[in-house]
Image (tube, rainbow, N blue to C red; front, side, top):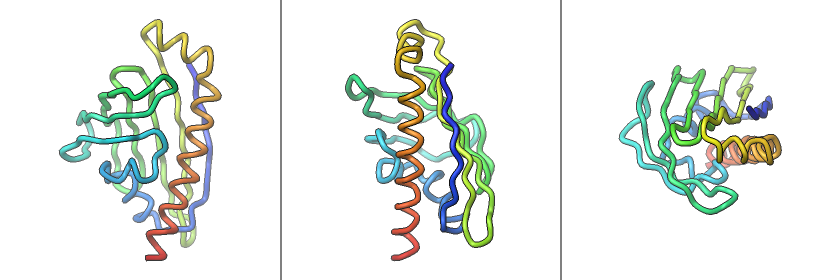
Length: 144
C-alpha cells in the first residue's frame, strides 16, 4: 500500500478551504488530474462519478465518501481502484492547517502492480500539486 502525507498552512479561513473540498463541481478547478465530476450532493456514504487523468489516459472512477465532517474532515475512497484521499482541517489563527493523505489500498492485481511500480512517487506528486493548487485557489477566492 502506498501512502503520501503532507501538512500545509493555507492563508485562508477554514470555511474557504472547506468550500473547495465540499463543492465537487469545483474540483477540476484546483485538483490536478480531476477532469469532470457528476455528483448530486456530497454527504457521508454517498457515491459519485469522477473522470480523472491517469498515467495511461482518462478513467472513470466511482468514489464513495467514507467520512464527512463539516469544515473538519473529508475521506473519499475510489470503489474501482482502492485509491483514497483524506483531508483534515484545523483553524490556525487566521488561516487553515491542512493535514492530507493520498494513497492506495489496491485489491486487484493491475492496481497492485501500479502501486508497487510507481505508487509512492505518483501519490506524493499528486498530493503536493493538490495542496499547492488549493492554496492558489484560496488566494484567488479571498482576493476576489
